[in-house]
Amino acid sequence: YWTSGHSSWTIPDTLADCAPGYRKDADGPNATRLCVACEPGTSSPGCPQTSCDPCPAGWAANSGKQATACVQCEPGYFASESKSTKCTACPAGQFQSSSGGTACADCDVGTYSDVGAAVGCRSCSVGKVRRDLYSTLQYVNMEGRTEWVPF
Image (cartoon, rainbow, N blue to C red; front, side, top):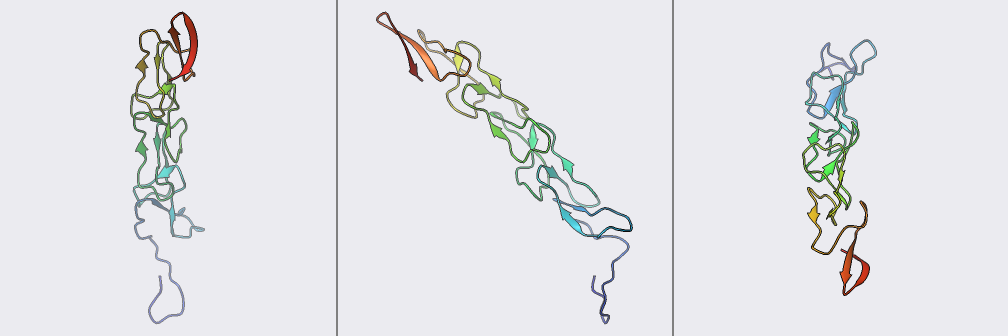
């Protein structure tokens, strides 16, 4: 703080409140008494916190730095580790039906998902089956012939 009429800085005994997404620098004799932006994957509602809280698995600080709160991953997305900076879409062949997912589940045999960020799997049509858990191919029996074709 600048002190009027003096050519020196004066640091007050207490720090002004930090805005959400920031934390107070560590208290003590070596503290800078500044507000510091939260690290990626963490959040803070603001003062008087001296640390930012890591987002738990299934949640992410989507805005990266200066996050005011962690956001729960939506269905079709997941965050497998704490301190995630974003939720990741489930790949084709997998799904996540709940909010706050920490992993995606494989589609059951006889079902499939041909898009990312799926919240569920669709049943294979009559005469068609999924080849394996990660396949985007289906079995088609046409006039006695066996073919594997893309969905």
